[in-house]
Length: 229
Figure (cartoon, rainbow, N blue to C red):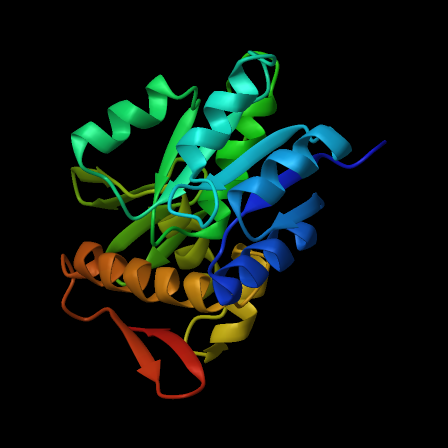
């Protein structure tokens, strides 16, 4: 099966290469462009399946690129990648023909999901049903398939990503899990942006687990994390 071809237009080179590498690792073919004029030219030459356009680019901004494309192509999905998130900018983006709008900084995983949703037939991303496994964490019960924590009669939800992380910690309880292993297993790579996302989710998990003060997620500096109680 042919790979999905993503045209990525981003003039910030370091970010562009990180995003390109992450998309390629996720199975996409990436056409990288450094400015709006090049993006429009490559769109016409390469016939990509989807476009991810930075808004602020030299020679031609993302809004203008999208307007040119929409003159002849109403169907190809377009995602804007931008730090500009004022309501008027979002409105301008959609009026230019965008299907989606992703604010910087963003996780590449979120971009991958949005690409797959936009390219799916019914605009819904089908997720395989998870096998439910229960883990006893001190006096909490964690249900990995249901994405819940329970203490006595109280049950509260956690996100799917929090559940993925907690499941790995539970499987290796009282052992140090290297950050790189967590990142490559759950995100698919250990890029800077994904590493920052991991830190955020660990903080959120700690808040959930505060219901039992005996439970700790310990940060082993420079190595990884350990779940103890």
